[in-house]
Image 1 (cartoon, rainbow, N blue to C red):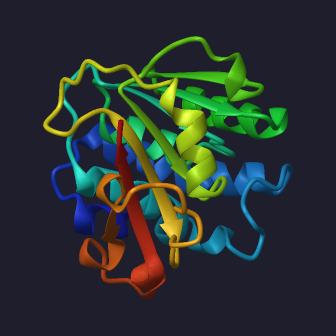
Image 2: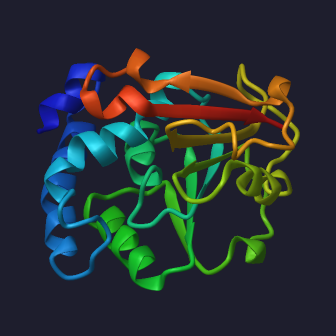
Image 3: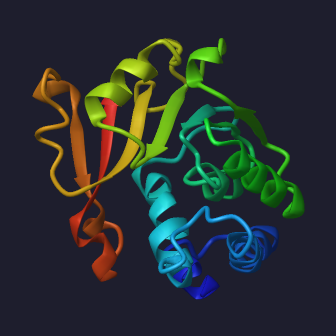
Length: 208
């Protein structure tokens, strides 16, 4: 299934291809022990989880050295696929569930990722600042914005202002109450990817 990744990202180098290929072995193996992905969904790993995470890489390409925090990373999405895609950026993956952090950390080690760190606990315990917060279907958008603001530094190194980039399904109107329409930007993932899974999926960008 690595072909679905190279279909949309044809310029991957050999190491990146090997790392993405390895995910197809490591995640099912771990999932048989610890349920980090729905067991009904593990067969859709590459489209529903890896490619979905990489929608952020279709949205923009960060400069080297850009820092990201993945809130509620679960088993490592979107952080691990993005760390493979952008080896010269740094990623800090956070989740309250220790066993999921353990899986993500083990997989990152197995594929040789050197640009990721991990934190088991609440994001309120994190005292660092980052260029971007990334997240995938963790909580309501308005709650995510509140949590994210203090984590984002003001000095921007990219063409986009620093902020929150999250992946959502369906409509976000109810989730974005209290947020100005001028500060919430929605992008349909069906523009990037043609698989049916993406027909109702969105990328949401909130600059800070």
